[in-house]
Image (cartoon, rainbow, N blue to C red; front, side, top):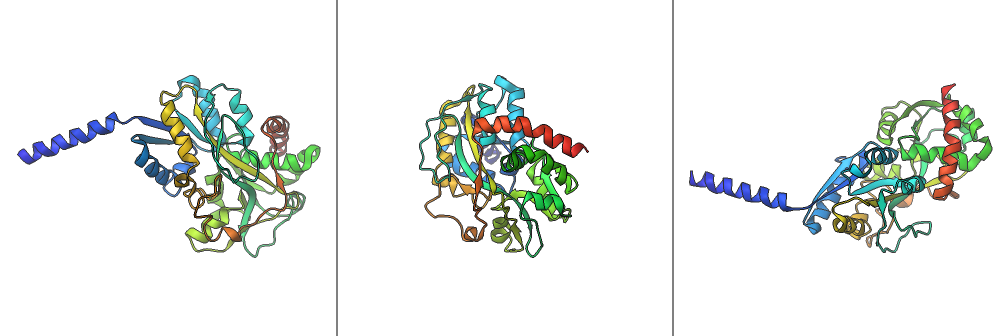
Length: 326
C-alpha cells in the first residue's frame, strides 16, 4: 500500500508539473505534424529548451490554414501559424490577425527577405515528379498537347495548388486560360492537399504529380530509391517560400517569439531537409544532406511579389474554374 501511495504521489506531482507548464499552440499543415514530417522532432527539440508544451495542430493544407484563421478570428486558439507562403502573405496581413516579429537571421534564401510580420523557414521550386525513364513534356504547352496524366491540388485549399495557378499565370499571362483549357483533359483529379495527390501518384494513378524539385530526395535518402525525378519546364519554375507568424491575440507572446527565433536556428533548420523535404531558409552548419546535390536546379525562377500574387490569383482562379468545369 505504501508503494502505491508513493507511486500515486509521484503521478500527481508529475501531472501538476505538466499542468504548470505554459502551452504554445501552433497551427500548421497535416504533413508537418505527421509521423514522418518535421513535427515530432521539432516538438522534442523545442520542448527541451522552452519549459513548455508545444501543441502542433494539423489543419489540412497551407491555404486552408488561412481560411481556418479567418473563420476563427480573434477567438482562435492559435498562438503561431506555420505553413503560409508568399502567395498568401498580403491576404493574411489584411486580416489584422498577425503581429510583427523581432527575428534576425542570416537567410540563405534565393530572394531578399525583409518582411516585418512573416518569418521564412523553408523554400523550394514547384515541379512535376515522375518516374525516371518516362518521356515527359518540357513545357505546359507540350503537356497540354500530350496524353500525359497529372495530379494537381486545389488552389483554394492548397499552397502547391495556388503555386501552380500562379506558375501558369506568371509564364503565360493573358494566354493562361488557353493553357488551362488544354490541360483540363490531362488532369486525373484535383485533391484538397498535397498528401492526397502524392499518395495517388505513388499508387500509380497518374504519370506525374505536382510537387517540388526536392521531392525525389525523399525517395533517394529515406527509401534508397532513385527512380523518381522532376520534369524541367522551359518556362521556368515557380518558387515557394513558406513562412510562419505570431498571432496578435496570443496570450503567450514571449513564448511565440521564442518559437519564431527557434525556427531559424540550427536545431530547427537541420530538421527541415529530411523531414519536410525542402531547402532550409538558413542553411545549417552541417550543410545540406548528401543527395540534395543531385536535384534539379531550375535555370529560371518565377515568383510574384506578395501584392502581385493577390491580383494574379483574382484573375487566374476564375480561368482555372472555367477550364475545369468544361
